[in-house]
Amino acid sequence: MRLAFLVVLAAWSVASIAAAAPLRACTPPVHVSPAPAQRPPEREIVRDTPTASYMLALTWSPEWCRPRGGSPEARFQCRQNHMGFVVHGLWPNGPGKRHPRYCAKAPAISAATVRRHYCMTPSADLLQHEWAAHGTCGWKTPDAYFDKAQALWRAIDAPDLAFAAGREVTAGDVRDAFVARNPALRRNGLYIKVVDGNRLQEVRICHDLRFRPAACRSGLGAPDHARIRIQH
Image (tube, rainbow, N blue to C red; front, side):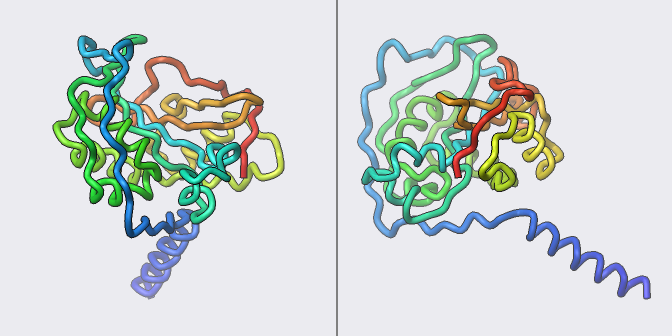
């Protein structure tokens, strides 16, 4: 009897987790064109600042698509797939307001690497930019950089924010939604970025030097009580 109860309980637990965690159904394009390498802006090169922490920046795709949905570059992300959060980038942050950027030369990423990570970051231009601006400040190859970002991303059960459809909510509601699905995250380790009209743009997850969730070092963006709008 006890064994049968445990089997039923285990099956219920698995079903509950599956129901709580929406699948990120996405098939990358068969063919992708890598973005060319570009010369970094001289004023943005920062090579004398040590890394003190990391931040995984997640973009709320519906908001990104809102003004761009009709553009050719947005076809995959905005019209061919229904995406919630996608990865903007994995950023090494400095101990203060200056952060490591463009630390080494960044050749063009291969088509295979772009395709492998296209469902995480659905833009060849953005993948190239993130590798050049941030990946070169901690990783020797694009694959090593994006594999780390992918591992951190897969460890996050990102909420779909359906509770916010058609109504105004607070930044605290968004933090609550992340922590409810990810007990290892800290509420003070979630930076909420909003754009014009208090629209949710990104949720940034702060990590320490061992890539463990940690308190954000430079504020939390929108405070818990801030009322925000979430595009759907």
